[in-house]
Structures are given as structure tokens and as C-alpha cells.
Length: 360
Ligand SMILES: *Cc1c(COP(=O)(O)O)cnc(C)c1O
Image (tube, rainbow, N blue to C red):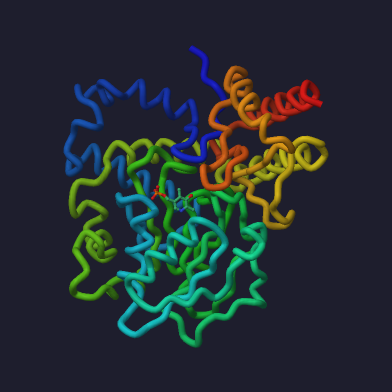
């Protein structure tokens, strides 16, 4: 068996050690005669797995008891609605920053629930920049400020954490969570779909400051109310047990790698060498302002788009998978999350250099 290097934006690569452990435990979990997928979520065996996963995540991210950690379903896209349904009261306004396709979707969805003020946008630069905070037009007293720290499609990442005083800061961290250390205390709410930098699809993580619970209106369905899930340890109904278990294996793997501090250094090195190569080549280019380039998603275009197809075909033949850019922007994109080893980035650079030479 040979595993290729996988640069998929999501569902993305998982650590091989995690897949091997899951394979080993698949048919007969620790001598119990059944798999994780086949046991009750109320079984002590699963409850222990669930609690350990939460504990490891709290350790990795430094999440204090002031926050609830929720293991939900519905993807980050459901959070586009759940956030305003839970945090945006009658007559209140929420501020959003528009830096790309995911911000836009969040803004559009939130608009169905209340007043939304787009306090800043970089659409005029085709989302190649992050608007400086000095230029933001925040409302007087917004219910929260929402932003997307890493725009997965455009490859744009904030180089700063917005400072919004006492206003809750809400972040869609789907493609940047666990990629480096952050100070959770700066946030009111963090959410992330698991399938980029955590685990398999089907699990959505929410980290919410406890004082923000219990604000949803009466007509918000129980399943879409954060309070419901916080009150029931995310087991109000059947949670995505296998995705939760596998994410727990990833958390424990991350701890063995030295945690997010160490991961952050590796990720920085991976991204820097890829951008450095792109910037010094004659064939490839990246449009994003240098300070706001994503460490997780590296889009690039070829000077001649007739070379796109041969590039992708030959990359795949060389064991470099899923380099096609998002359908909305074209070109290429290499997603280099935690589970993508530095050797994969080295192999990609070697391939790109060779391809450029052949097509000069
Ligand atoms: C992938 C992604 C989403 C959508 O996630 P789903 O789980 O598919 O709903 C939202 N925001 C960001 C930043 C993403 O990368």
C-alpha cells in the first residue's frame, strides 16, 4: 500500500497514525466485541472517549472553564445561522467583516435573522487583502463581531486578532483551528467544521463563552440552541460518535507532536517555503498581499492556464493529489493542514520546479 500526498481543502488529509489506530480498533474495540460505531453514545465506554477528546482539546487550545465545548453536526454552514439565532436579539445589530467567499455566506445567512452591518470588506481588491482594523465601521453597540480568520478559498489569513472591547468576537475557524496557538479568551465564540484541520466530516466544534448561552429566543428549535447542547454534554440527541472518536485520536496525536506550538512552527515553515518558491518562479504566482497569506491554504495560478490540466494530471501521476483550486476561483490550491507533512510540501515544490523547467 502506498499513500499519496493529499492537498485537499476538505475533507482533508488525516494523520496516518490515526487512521492506523482506527483501523486496528475498528472491528473489536478493546476486546469488547464491537466497533465504536455500533455502541450506544450513553455507554460508559463512549462517554469516556467523548470526555477524553474534550479534555485533550481543552489542553491543546487552553480553553478555560468559562467556555463550553460543543460537539455538534450540520457543518460550519449551520453555524452561519446558529450564531445569529442564538446571539442576535430583537432590534440588535451584528457586525461582519467580509474577506471572502465564506464571510459572504455567513453574512448572507445572518441577514435572514436580523440587522447586519458589514463593517469592512476587501471585495474591491478581489479579496487579496484584509482591511486594516482602523478602517472598520463598527456599529455603536453590536451584539457581536463576526470574522473568518482564514478564508479557505482565497487563501487569505488575518495577521491580527480584531480588538473589539467587550463585544463578543465570533470566529469561523474551520480551516485554521489548531494550526497554531491562539488566546481563546479573546473570543466569545469559535466554530469550525471538523473536516479541515480536526477529523472527518460530520462533526462541528463550537467553543462558546458560557455567559453567551441562554440568549436564544423561544422559537429557536432545541437542536439549534447552544444551551440545549451545553446542558446535555452534546448528547441531547445522538452525536456523530465515530467522528467524535476519530477527532479525539487526532487531538491525542497532536499532543504527541508537541501540541499546537510545535505544529505552528512546522506550519509556518511549510507555508514559507512554498510561498518563497512561488514568488521566485516565472510560472507560478499568488495574488494575496504578503502579510495576509494563509498558512493553511496556498492558492496559485500558472502564467498560462492551458498548462493547468497537464499540471494536475502529472501531479496526480506523481502522487500529489487534489491540487485543483476552488471552482469559484480556478487555478491551483495546496491545502497544507497539520496532517500534511513537511515532506509533502518538499515533494510538491520539487514537482513544481520540474514542471516549470519542462514547460519553459
Ligand atoms: C469549509 C468551510 C466552511 C463550510 O463548512 P461545512 O462544514 O461544509 O459547512 C465554512 N467556513 C470555512 C472557513 C470553511 O473553510
